[in-house]
Image 1: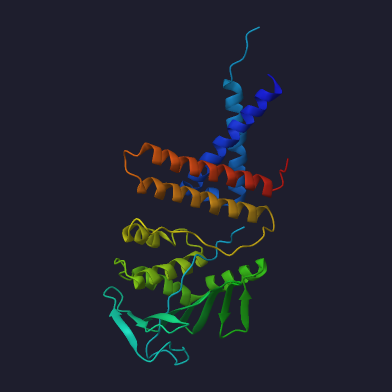
Image 2: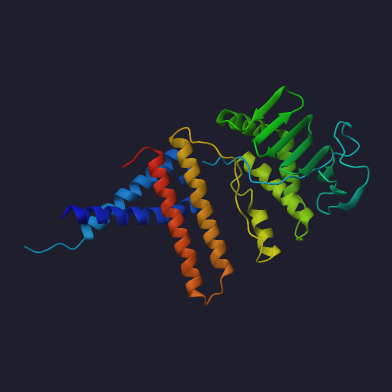
Length: 61
Length: 251
């Protein structure tokens, strides 16, 4: 996988995380705590990146 | 950076004859008096002068006075042996306790913490929030607005997450031209915790304003709703980017 593809995947994961975090913060009061919220944000970012990376179509050799 | 200590507004209330006469009266005779049915508290509005307008809420052994002056609002709460004044002006937030030699200056982070701590430790403020929450303020008069804003101010200082719910409901009933805008003392972040607190406030505000935006659109106005979504997404991404930058992940 090319570096540009990985960067694109990170950007997509970042945008999705940024878009959904406010909904989580509104509906899950515990996520407003700094430690839990930061962990959740980092986990969501990493998790989304992993899912996007796994589902990304690859060329067959 | 925003500290969740204040929203905006002021209410004056006055503890009737059972209170010491220390409370400064804004004028000789109220031009409006109303006894709240639910609580029995009396709401008084005094004739505004060139530099001051005031509303009082007088209940048994509790007085709330909200004074408005150019560039400055004061919320004074007298009761439970306390006499606390919260002042908001261009310099920030100040909390003065007449019993103690304390004036917490909100222009510094430490001052904000002290101010909030003093408010949160006040029995009179808790009673005032409870009283204002029980009052019948369903109409859209300026006095109701003043009472709701004061409750939101005190509730947010106490850390209540739903402090501005009643005010938000009121603003929706008041008509399409009225909307709630959050305001807070501005401070530079001290560390990652402050970064997160600011991000949470911005993110929640973005979502609430998105909901308000969608509510104000007709159901068939798809472009309008997409516009709301676009604005929300830009704000959400901007806020998240700011948080990442604030905690030190600078590219």
